[in-house]
Length: 317
Image (cartoon, rainbow, N blue to C red; front, side, top):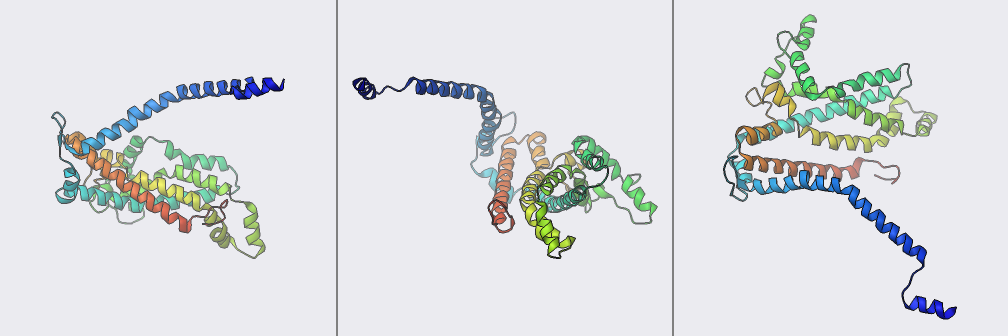
């Protein structure tokens, strides 16, 4: 018997149970690849492929209907030396981001704090505050066109009724972007829900500890709520910044980039370049520059997070 075992080890044979497990593992791996294949093909065909193609076209002078000619970094140089509308659109988008992101996050956080209280009909209030997020963006834009109407819109009618001065809102060069910033608060529902989920995860005993030490509601908010919510604030900050740099519907439906390019958002300018002027090569360069700008901002936000974001599991900032 010992000789048989010795020959089995010398010949490299394995117990049948391990062979069965190995065969089962190969079968699971094969079926895993088969089931993942549609998603992999979809990514390669509809995401990675167009990205590679757009990067190639960004290095060419290609107008739709003609053959692309290679110009290297000429399109990128053109942005900063010849194209004033590029700098204008980048400035407008940055201005909108600096206004919309803090305002939307503050309103969303404040409403989440209110909805975190135990009051009667709480579910009804949560539904009411979240409903505007479910309105399609086009329908929302049409609604706000009426609200911003300088003659019979809701805002100016309300201001007149209380004797306050009115505004031309989106029809004014100076008020166009601030008006759209106000409109952005309409969509705070998603941010509110995420904040609310974070608030419900804050341990109750931390508030009790502050109360035992004689702390009031403000000290509970400052020393417990804010530190515990910093990961949620950081997440909403990153996603909001990325989202505001991709604003399109407001300019396309409500202002067409006007008046006098006051609301010429970057994505709307990219759209005009690609599909109105048919300069697909230059539009691809604009798209890749936006990708690099957003990536740099995101990296900077992640680096800054080390100083102010508190992770309870890590026990440190």
